[in-house]
View 1 (tube, rainbow over the protein chains, first blue to last red):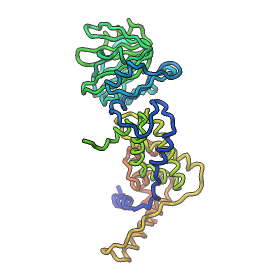
View 2: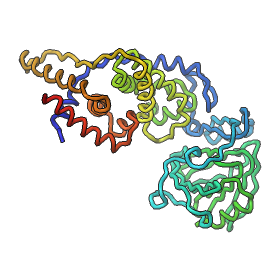
View 3: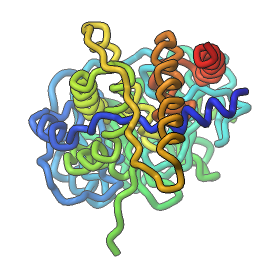
View 4: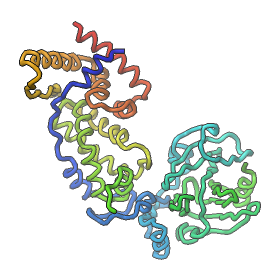
Length: 237
Length: 178
């Protein structure tokens, strides 16, 4: 080690050229920019609730941009989720990185509970940071099938938040309420810390959500039939 | 009671399209962004363009930024990329200079000159190092970036920053000793 040399380097007083006023020039440039993934807003608008900000959503559908229906907007505002744009695009079916699931990890290293589907092989494991600050255990099996676990409730507002192009059916998985969603969708959820988040569809427009008695929300998503999704949900442990 | 917004709150608001929040973020990081670009390009005009374009690109990419992670390494990755792209396309370079210290009563004019000469020699030796050595030492000691931030700016793994820093210090020591 060379502590003296390191100290001498740290103590060099560099005469950096004066920093230009980038804040002003950048502000002028981005003011003219369309926002690619969130609703365009002017400068100087009042602060929205933080929950609104973290829940800005891109929901993948199929080509163009849809307006959020008024009834749905009202629910989002009530939940504190004000900015939701539904953007049509090509559905993504490639697992792993393009799903934006966060940090790859292992089951042993996960700090949150993870429900596994034993019949589906060995999953890719990810710790996914959710907008409300909590972490979801995301397991991606061949198919691809996403089996995700996090602490949340979705039932009270599911119909109002899934989106106009989606349907929801109420089912039962071993005594727990299950919601079978078909069609391009997203869903709002309430986290245990009383904050609300919004999850976009990640893999496919076919998702089974199970509100388990232990407080965990199980999400099974993929190009699945209802029966197959229910089978996976009943098999998890 | 009113309070200043935290950086994560500013990022969340900016990601939603709030330009005021983003201007605050730029203001907080413009020094480090400009100086990182300056270290790489060694040209103030190019550094300004690189930092400015980087902030605009970061704005466009904000919806992809993962909330809760530190923003500075993410930003510096974009800044350094912009700076490297410019460096490849230009020729004129200005070496970094030392700030002139005001006279101090507790030190004689002679010792001040000696100290300035020593510091000048060290900076000149740093400038003579090969590019990757100069950049890793510049990031770690002149900009005082963390290892993670240096890794982000140089596009290498944190472990590489550690080994490259140690190697570069060895070469600098040889350079100064000559």
